Length: 339
Ligand SMILES: *Cc1c(COP(=O)(O)O)cnc(C)c1O
Image (cartoon, rainbow, N blue to C red; front, side, top):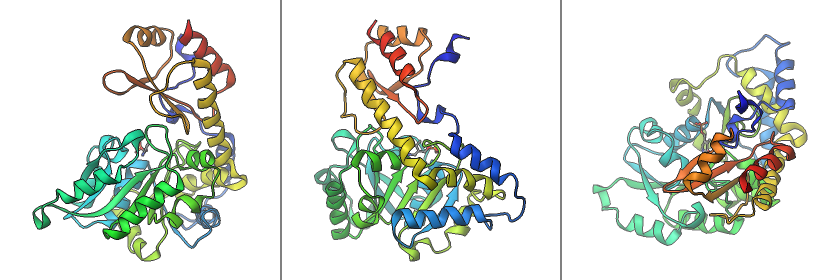
């Protein structure tokens, strides 16, 4: 098949397991002792997460990002609560109602805003339209970092959201499926875009960064984590061989491989943006490009074996880079793109 030698720009979850994560997994395969997270690998990850965020946080593994988001929201909400989120957020568009399901009914309230960022004037309007006890009570605001549309929130933008949340008594959740890409894009410390900016709980992604499976739910306030272990177990998210989920994470987090991988993906997206010489729909601030493309051009690229898909109707396509894309892949795609 000619497709085999084409890099997959469809998503970053098409990438392989990165070498450091793979090596740590192989090392963990020499052990064979404690189960259900009672192992040295899981402890190392939780300790390293505290170091990275420079605070006493509580971390839990779940299998994927949908579980991380929906269980953390369920943890913050009661069934009659609601969650403000961007209309293009993954929790709203890509999780099959899991946040509503696991929370037992908490409704997602869609907010607009340019470049995938929550517009606070719109958020205020959405809240004003809630009809006291006839509508679910707004209780959480959820932001994504880096954002689904390839952009990032600046610390001051998060600060404004945190102030808004505080004024209205909302808790703050961050979907960090691509958190690393935001950290390198901003050149900031992880704490500067999380708990110092009011984030209460973070879904911290590793899969798109270079592991096979397993995301972390990180609580920055210990009291919010109460009994989360039971919630995760009931939701079928407790791995009995947790060490094999945790070990690859040690490969990412030790020696800052997670940041190296994210930097590689972000730099690749920048290079691609330069070589395609075409207008971008959203600013390229992380690892994805969004382009308006006519059907014929898409058909031609697909016929040449390039995979990527339409993200927003009628004609906006996403090109996503990962830790594993090479300069050669970029040059080959660019050559076919401009041909
Ligand atoms: C990929 C992704 C997730 C997680 O998706 P899963 O398929 O459930 O692992 C969550 N949020 C965003 C923004 C994503 O891109």
